[in-house]
Length: 239
Image (tube, rainbow, N blue to C red):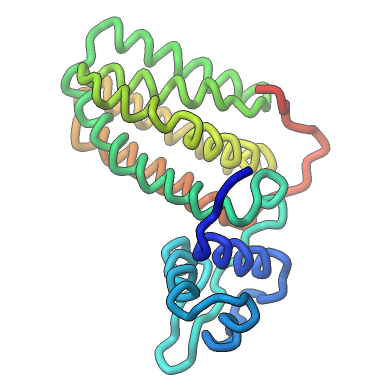
């Protein structure tokens, strides 16, 4: 069973309340005193939870007025992970933005012909998973791992493998949600991967770094967007 800190638990309870429409978009959260009393926590712990919610774009402060809900994730988010886990998922993306942005930079400088072929193969597998409407977590991780390997620096590979479990959880949630979004939004994810590949193989290191950072930041943001659509086809859950 997962062990959560008090700020994590408070974060999860408030996020769940937002998703369940207890606190709709544009509504004002209860005061810190009222919230801390309701949750049974101290105000410093509550403030730590509120800071994470602000960083994740769920709430925003209005000077002299309090905290307001500015984004309401779709209820389907809670089908894939408890609200308490979502802060860690967001943190995993923040970590990857830093590490994998640099990995893409050095991959563009150092890749070999074998690395280029491995990347091309991984990208094709990722596109095929999307075409078949499979979740494609293994394919997604493999693409990012091939980039790390192309850096010719084993520390990038080790850094990615060290957080494989956490990264795969985040990927699984993000890709499950993508399967329930419009075709245009699903295509956008493919375009982002293709842009990373193109910048790397063109040896445009700065652009490769930015393409990776843009993709991961967009993936982090998409977790909490509410543009999910009903789809009669069920995603393949075994991949």
